[in-house]
Length: 331
Ligand code: CTP
Ligand code: MG
Picture 1 (cartoon, rainbow, N blue to C red):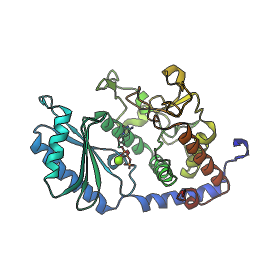
Picture 2: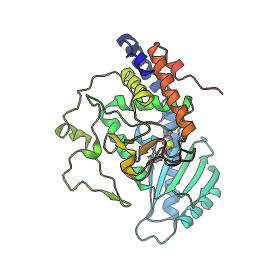
Picture 3: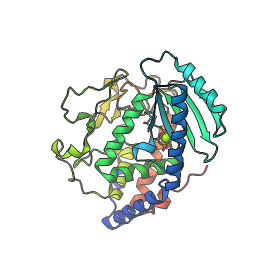
Picture 4: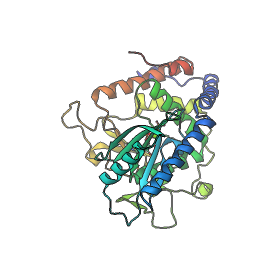
């Protein structure tokens, strides 16, 4: 029960914070991996330009947002210029077939009719996995926004990194970036900060505006530098929040608002109380606000996920090591 959980003492939190720094160093991609990814990107970019003159290949996902662990996949987005008359299916199939004729790539898989049409491949040399999505423009924007957040305060990068690692190790894979808003906030809500134009950035029908010029953040947000919590303390608070405080039955995590919205207001209620309901755990996509990022979490997995947050919280309460908190889960 949450009342028996106390905040761990400062000495312990300091140790954990130092350990987080170590783990981030240890688990970040090596120079060599970064170079291999850059080389792979260059090769793919050349092929895309040859096949589709006027197209652009963008990087997004963890390789660009600052939260990459070692051996993460590479996420790319192919966008055609306005003159293109090709359909998504044609583009994905043309690209996939071309890649199959080259020796540099293996395990090529085409999913031309998926929500985001995609070509999957691996580098034959380095074994790096890569997804090339077609027209996944909103994902490029949410990557830029995460990058901007991580440029504001490096504690976000460290804590997000640790949560990602922990979630992978504990096998509750969906990463959580949300809800670092608190009494003394560590981050502003970039989608709500003032703008010098009308604040719209229409991308595929959604407003993808966020405040981008972090070097000017001080002039629009008074919170810069005010929060002094250690990463260990922030980690504990996140575990505690999702274990005991987040109103999972009624609430929706909203990155856009930096707060919790109501399921009812969004018409995102669990109706049948069945495993297949889409709204057991709700996280609003920051731009595509009709999209629930938590849709794949069902009643049973939600129970497991909250159990993991409680376990982490209790272990920190017993001054457990980061190794034990992130100890690999075995059936
Ligand atoms: N993305 C999204 N909506 C989702 C899933 C993914 O917008 N429901 C976008 C995000 O920009 C995300 C990117 O697609 O960063 C790549 O997804 P994924 O590879 O799953 O996550 P990464 O952030 O790259 O993390 P990892 O290091 O685990 O690959
Ligand atoms: Mg990725």
